[in-house]
Amino acid sequence: MGVADLADYPWDAVRPFAVRAQQHPDGIVDLSVGSPVDPTPEVIAAALRGSTDAHAYPQTAGTPTLREAIAGWYARRRGVPGLTVDEVLPTVGSKEFVALLPLLAGLGPGDVVVHPRAAYPTYEVGARLVGATPVAADDPAEWPEGTRLVWLNSPGNPDGAVSDVAALRAARARARELGAILASDECYAELGWDAPWDREPVPSALDPRVIEGDRTGVLSVYSLSKQSNLAGYRAAFVAGDAALLSGIHTARKHLGLIPPAPVQAAMVAALSDDEHVDRQRERYRRRRDILRPALLDAGFRIDRSEAGLYLWATEGRDAWETLADLAEIGILVGPGTFYGPHHPQHVRLSLTASDERIAIAAARLRAR
Image 1: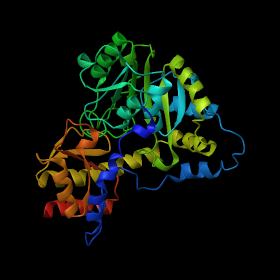
Image 2: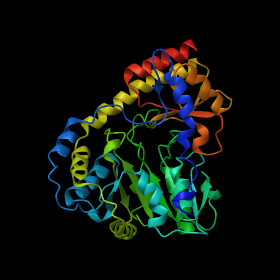
Image 3: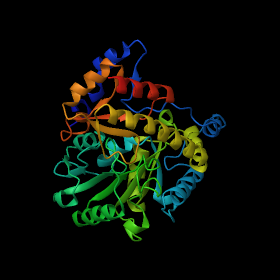
Image 4: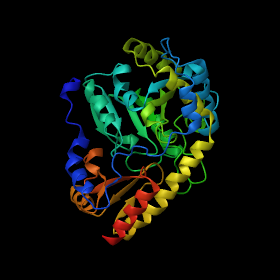
């Protein structure tokens, strides 16, 4: 299978609903894709501006300063101490890494890639790109023989589900039985809302309580798009098994997958400053506190959503009907069918709209 054989891009199907929502007299409230709307923090923008003399080729592995910043951030914010510079690697956003990991890890026909039942579609895309078989299964007991890569996503996109330490340990144990890589997509880990994640950090697959001193076969993937408003920078990284990352690094050098040098400098600034992350988290908390009760008042049930950037909601009917009705009141959301066939009645609502637009959405929902 090649890139040309992939299905049509799913978000294209939402365009007619976007057109309808845009016709609302007070404009559209776009809660669909989840693209940040808040300003890039000045401390990061200044670092980018100060690094524009980027005449030399950047390093695929990242500058030593960046790799040290990634390792330090894992220790400080994720409870993962002791990472070395050989155990981290910057990426051009997280989506390209998710899509290309099966290729970079040497998977192919006959191999199985496991991903969550409610899943970011790029996990499946990456599997199909190399001819591997994607399998949607949350229970490690259901992961079949022949599995060579397991994707976890905690907090989940779209459903905000969090895997606690016990669940991560079980996943690691089963992946080891199968001889599979365990890759944990943790891009929303700073955004914990409901107990206990409002008081304690969402655990990483690299947490010492999970790996018990051995990072073999385990990767943690992270993005700065949401917590630092850097979606346009394409700034992300992966950490974990040094031997595995060494081979991935070599492949990435051949393919030219290199974050630009100014972006690498901006990443250092972002990873070294915790205040802007805390401010952004509070913005999203405030918006969630407005949107969530309005959905409940409008007759929706909200499932999971204990962390992350989205509310995973249902009216108990077909998602496309909900999508159409919300478009009539100028609200655009994402249908659950984009995240697999298991949730045909759910829609995903993003918290990435301005305070003003979130308040308008809440008012429209209550008046519906």
